[in-house]
Image 1: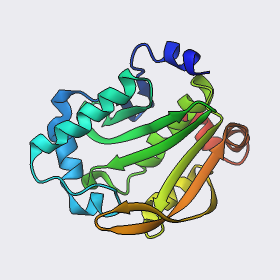
Image 2 (image 1 turned 135 degrees about the vertical axis):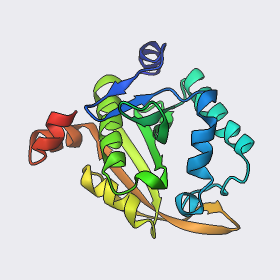
Image 3 (image 1 turned 120 degrees about the vertical axis):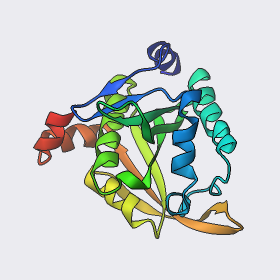
Length: 201
């Protein structure tokens, strides 16, 4: 499975819907990444401090490039057609040899409330399950992060439980919800009550 995924990810895949284009993040996107993670509202529930200087965003861009080069994960830049400016990111923070992947996403606050992240997550899930043959996608989220929980609920994830004091950042331990979705559940989900979702992806 790992070798097959490496073959599929020889070149960075571009994902398209009518509204969005998910593409590779490059050094040219450093200002856009800073605009996302330089906002306290965006980073409130993240395991990172709010960026203070644009050069700090270089580490994020380097990490996106590294995980793809090493085929450990993939993170797309979210753009709103026809503009090519990155307004958020979405993808898999890491792949597990046993067919698991960890989902992550974020969005510039200026674009909240438009269903953009939900759409980007659907596109990412579809590529992960159908093309990369991932069997289980997981997501962990802070208990207070209602917006992120809403996204996961919308696309069919199931809450498995609370991972007690699983995360540690900003000087304290945090309980996290563990969510997951299986490939067979995803295929059943999009062929059933979510007809609109099936057409989108």
